[in-house]
Length: 95
Image 1 (cartoon, helix red, strand yellow):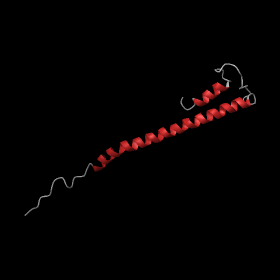
Image 2: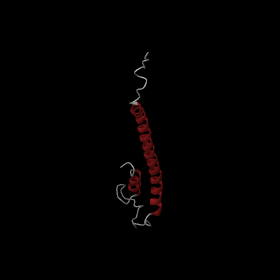
Image 3: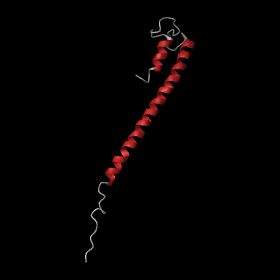
C-alpha cells in the first residue's frame, strides 16, 4: 500500500525572496535616518561655528589674513561686513 504525502510540505522555493521583501523597507528606513541625523549634526555644527567665527571676525578687524577691514560699519550686504560673513557661515550647509 502506498502512502501519499501532502503537496505543500516540501515547497519553500520563494522563502528568501519573501524575507528580503519584508526586510528591505526596514533597512532603507534605517539608512535614510542615519543620513538624516548626520545632516542634522552637520547643520548644528555650522550654527555653532558661525557664531564663533562672527565673533572672531568682529574682534580681529583689519588683522585678518586677507587684510580687509571686517569691522566696517557699512551696509550689512557688503562682502566685508561681519553680518555678511556670519550669514555665509550659517547657510554653508543648507546651500
